[in-house]
Image 1 (cartoon, rainbow, N blue to C red):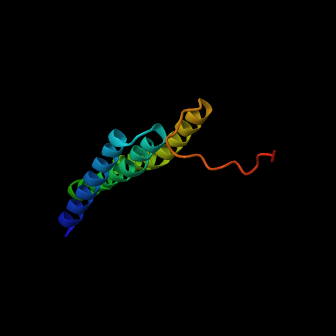
Image 2 (cartoon, rainbow, N blue to C red):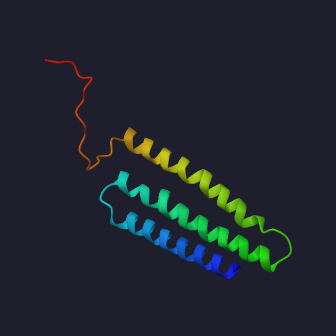
Length: 109
């Protein structure tokens, strides 16, 4: 039973990591490329680390805390780093390919 759970976690992690990496390589501009590593790849690597923690907890004595700590660190730092990268890109006025909505706060002529 544990082998099936580990297999599902590894396959899910590999698929999400591949989709995130593909998104990083294929998407058009900086802002859309930011979603690949921060969303899908984070979830994929998290699944792989949880599978590793379960495997080594079952085959060794005690709980494998290394993978749990790396997973927590990943889930905390990935959104923060993506937010800081997006703010830096906005500050540097990096162009996006998305259409800008009309400015409703602009004064009428």
